[in-house]
Image 1 (cartoon, rainbow, N blue to C red):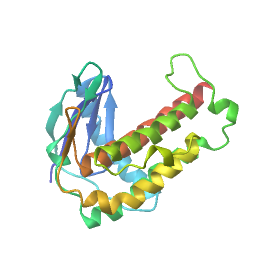
Image 2 (image 1 turned 45 degrees about the horizontal axis):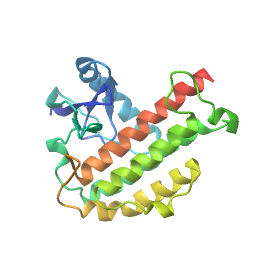
Image 3 (image 1 turned 30 degrees about the vertical axis):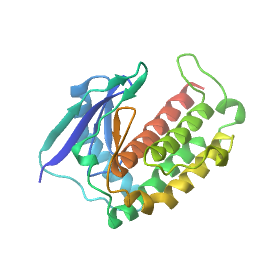
Image 4 (image 1 turned 90 degrees about the vertical axis):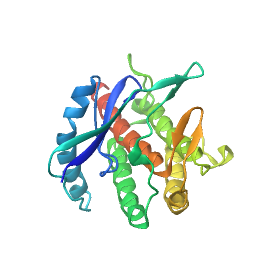
Length: 223
């Protein structure tokens, strides 16, 4: 059976998502390079899931590029990102259980990268980097909170701890607790010109955490 790949322009890069494998993606500055990297990303994802103790069936057969979408700017500075056909179906009860495992695995990877990092190293700002490691953590937590807000399910800002590590934990705990409510959101929402669904929220949250886990690894190599 062929498997689907959906590519989007996002923050100056191209990201090729594999919708059947939540959080599986290939990223590159060039569109074709991102797409051609998808088969390797699938193989790596299957190995990764096995290493975390849960099995994802591998995808075989040819790759079909179903959609390719460019970003566009809404009202001066808001980048509107893709809403794919694969983002539209509601989440199922079985998928909720799978997503719980994947969310735990992506967070475990992130926490592993933070081991043995001193407070000084975590707050060091390097030339060419937008954030320190602590800044990246704050960004990941804030983004996940914002994704949930697109569906009206975010925590109130008064509940968010100021410390980025504590905020990460608080937001992720809320995400896990909110999965049934997220699955109950059967429709879509359009805010600032961008369309969202429960499935898109999960696609973006998982991609974002995995991408910034790699980002932190690269920062560590420069410290």
